Image 1 (cartoon, rainbow, N blue to C red):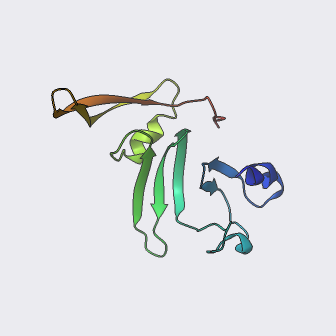
Image 2: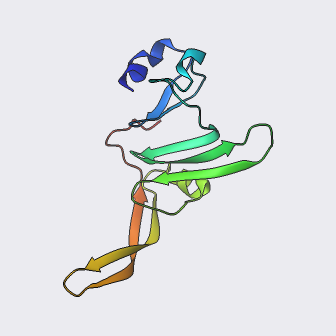
Length: 133
């Protein structure tokens, strides 16, 4: 991925976000980079709108090709449920946060049981590795 970060200034696209095995850009990759061969990318989806809030935290609205239907997707590390794009977008406002609740399983080996408890997941923008634009 470092190749794309370094060379994107001379390309027809700008790198918006990258992870270990994915890249989000605001343009088109050249055809020779897309395919099933080793080192090639697979085009998975096109977003109409997307926000990147922190490492492994993003969400957006996907365009479903020729139909006018859209689908919302959110990926939040450590949180298994979906969050609306509207709620994620609110986090772009400085000092905003989103308090989410999820079920968490806890095992007690000594007592031989498992309990399920509500756990609060506090989500806010992280500037550690991202330039906020």
